[in-house]
Image (cartoon, rainbow, N blue to C red; front, side):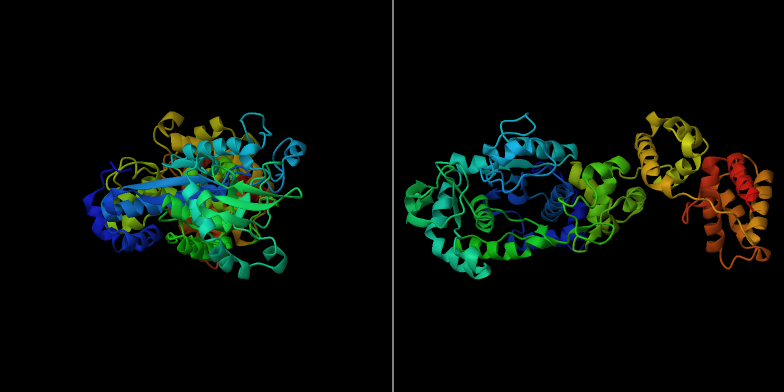
Length: 541
């Protein structure tokens, strides 16, 4: 992104912005105030383990890292940067994933590098090639700018050979760092180097003796025989923490974030990087996602929410918005958070044009647009776009329509509320109509239960019905809201607060404890259909 023109008005306020991407970028500014010496790009890295398909954690890491990258570019006025998506595809397959076909075939190849195992899907030359292709497709889908790097390609091409020789020269120093952190039984067989057996092709977990560091030679036991073996050009890979450190030094990584569960790995890899003559990158340690019960999300358990599930019920932008906030705080990831995330995204997006530059730099949507659109972030087209109907209101409409809810039916009601109510004229809204139908069907409809009005609620609903009968059919949402508001204030109906009145409306008319601004709902649904809802509720009293 070296050719990106960055708006000069942003650089000064970015120096003091409290938005976390700028706070992270300022760590790099201490290293490279104006970019790397000689004009080399500052290198950002994200890691991916291709023993499984890309998931929400992959999206999270690439998106957040991209935000820090763009923030650094803003702070430096456009210093060159790169983002590498590194696939650890030289790893040996430790266990067969539950969510792939041909598990028995994979089981025959346990221990071999992921790029040396047939693709169980039958589409690519190896299991890793399949998952790597899915990673690139996944990242491209969201418009990320990145460079894909394969661990296997780097090892086998010899690109890591000098770094591997360096590891051999410092083998004992690395053991001195790692052995005190291991259990006795693990320490007995631990080696920084994992040779690939020339007999079986398995990535071996065996003690290794360094024979000649400069030649890359080691010796070890392989199927009862002591052999001398070159670790160069794909003859071995490194243990995870050593591999991470080696990669930081060999590639010159300047920034990499990782989850809280890798805190200890980051500490040990940082020490190893120093031994190898480099230094640990800057980075953020982020909190993990939790499910609806507050438990850590596990791929094997299948709790939480997948990217595909989120996109079935909410927009890609809303997922990015939800991930943006407070990366150092744990987030619950379940379907219930989607509607608010969708509406909050659009509220922040609509706010951008009226915000001064300081507020704009703290707006999550500014960072999201900078992550995926190559503009200067100052007066970018489309930033002030708003959603004519909130997603929550769409959900209420679809819920009330019940079995009659279709795209066509929803759009017919949107004609009451939206100017030029044509799907082609409002593509973002149209996409959310489909998602509202899916979300309501799966999560809302099963929980809807309208109760009968009681006490003063009956008279209040009768008063509302009479007021709507007298109202102009073309009355707008604000005027309708005023009618509802004034009825709730009438003392003889006995509401302790307006909140109680609105809660009664939601529970008797919509079948939910929460709901929209009633004026907006009546304007969208229509006065006559709303009166029919009231009549239905009063018939139960």
